[in-house]
Image (cartoon, rainbow, N blue to C red; front, side, top):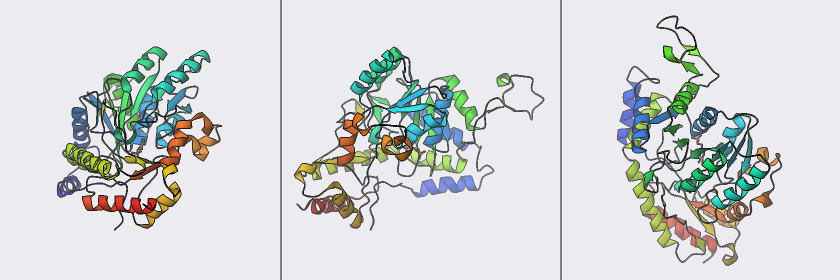
Length: 387
Ligand SMILES: *Cc1c(COP(=O)(O)O)cnc(C)c1O
C-alpha cells in the first residue's frame, strides 16, 4: 500500500459537520465561517481572523492590506512553496531571497542582517519580509521583528506549516512579532478544509481591509461608505477586491478538525521522535529543533550524508518511490523555478539553500501513519542505502 508523505485525517464527526451544513440554509456566507475564524483566533490568542479559500489568497490579501505595490520589494526564503513569493508578484512588487539557516532551514537572521545593511546603503530596503515557519518550526521572530523596527519593514508570517505550534511559549499566530500571520488548510497540512487558508492580525484596520478585499472590496456598513446609503439594500465597492471566500461547508470541516488540533500535533511529535530513534545510526541528519520553538511538525525532513552513502539522492528517492513510499523534496529553491530564474537570480548567492536542496528528503509523516508503516519506511531507506 502506498504511503504518502502527508495526508488528512477525517473522522465521522468531520463528515457529520459537513453534512449538517449541506442540510442547512447556507452553503456559504452563513454562520460557520465566523465560528471557524473565532475558534482559530481564540487558540492563537489574537483578536482578528479572516478565513479565505487558500493560504495563497491569504498571502495576497496580506500584501494588499499592507499596501504593497509595483515599486516595492519583498524578501522571503527560497526554501518554501512558490506561493510565499508569488503573493508579492500579484501586487507587482519585486522579490528577493534571504539564504537559510543550516540547522532550522528557516530564513537566516544573520543573512537577513547582512542583506539589510547592504540594502540600506543602496537605498533599496524591502517593504515586507515574509519568514516561513518551515516544517512547522518557528523562525526567530523576535530578532526579525526588531530588525523590522530598525529598518522599517512589515512582516507577514507564512505559517502554512505551523498552526498549533508555539514560539517562546506563545501560539504561532498570536502576532506579537508580525503584522499578519497566514495558515494553510490544504489536506497535507496540519488541519484541513479541503482548500482553505486564514489570515490573522492584531490590527483592526488590516483586518477590515482584508475582510473587504475577500469580497470584491465591498463594504455594507454605512459608516464605512464614502457617501450616503441609498437604503437597506445598499453596498458600495470602494476598491478592487476578489472573491476569495471560504464556504461554510469547508469551514465546518475546519471547525471540526480544530477540536483535534492538539491530538494531531501530539501524534506528529510521537512519530517524529520515533523516527529520530529509528534513524539515529543511519547516515542522515534528523530535524534539529530550536529550543524557542514547539513545532507543528508538518514535515519530517532529513538530510542525507551523501559522502557516507554509496548511492545518489536520486537513486535513493527512486528506490523509495518504487517501494510505494511517497518521499518528497521540500522544496526546490524558488529562485530555481523558471519564472524566477529568468529574473537573474544566481544559485551561488544562496550556498546554504543549494547544499540543503542537494541533500534533503521528506519522509512520510501524518497522524494516521502507523508504527508498522514507519518501520517499513525506515527498512526501505536502509535498503536504499544498501546497508
Ligand atoms: C501550502 C503552502 C502555501 C499555500 O497554501 P495553499 O493553501 O495551498 O494556497 C503557502 N506557503 C507555504 C509555505 C505552504 O507550504
